[in-house]
Length: 264
Image: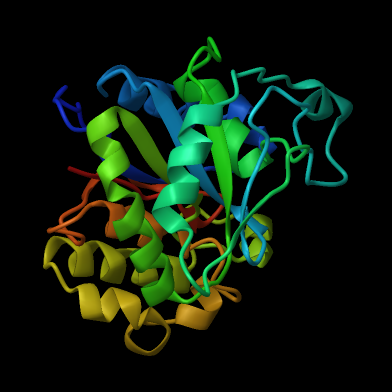
C-alpha cells in the first residue's frame, strides 16, 4: 500500500481515482488515503467530475445547483442511501465547460436535475467532507479513449482557473472479483495493474490508448471500458505529459486494483 504526499502548486493537477463502491466509507485504510491526498492538493475553486457511472450522449452537464444525490446501486444496507453531500452547484464552471466543448457537430446538453452519482460523491465525501467546494459532473459521451482524451485537452485550460478535473473509475473492474476472498488479488487484476503502472511510468500513451489489445487480460480486468475510460479524460487534461501520472494510491480492494493517479 502506498500514499504519497502531494506538494501544493499553482496550476491544478488532474486526477484519476478508483472511487470504490459505497462500502468504501467502511474500509479501514482507503478513506484515510483519499483524505490525505486531498489535504496535499491546492485548494480548488471548483471540481469537475467525470464518473464511470454516467454515460450520456451528447455530452451532458449535470445539476448546477444542489439537488439530491443519485443512489445508483441496489441491494446495499439502508444507511448507504442516507448519505448526503450537499456541495454548491457550479453554474459559472458549467458555462465555461459549454464554451470549451461545444462545437459544430459536438452538441452539449443540460440535465439540470441530474445529481452526483456514487462515482462522484463517494470519493468526495472522503476528500472534501465539508462539501464546500462547488462541484459539476459531466457525462462521458463515448468510451473511445482518443475521443475522451480530446475532451480532456479541451478542458485543460480550466486548470489555470483553479478547477480540479477528476476522472473517477476503477483501475480494474470486474464485479465477479468481489467474490474473491484469497490473500492475493486474482492474477488478471495484478497483471493488468502492473502493466498499467509500467505504461504510465514509461510514458507509453499509445499502449494505454490501445489497452484492449496491448494489455494482459484486458477483458477480464475491464469487461466493459467504462471504469478505465475516465483515465483518458484526466490524461488529456494533463496537457503535454499525459502519461506522466504518478501513483498516489495503490494496492487492491476485494481483488480490484485501486490505483489512483495524479497528473501535474
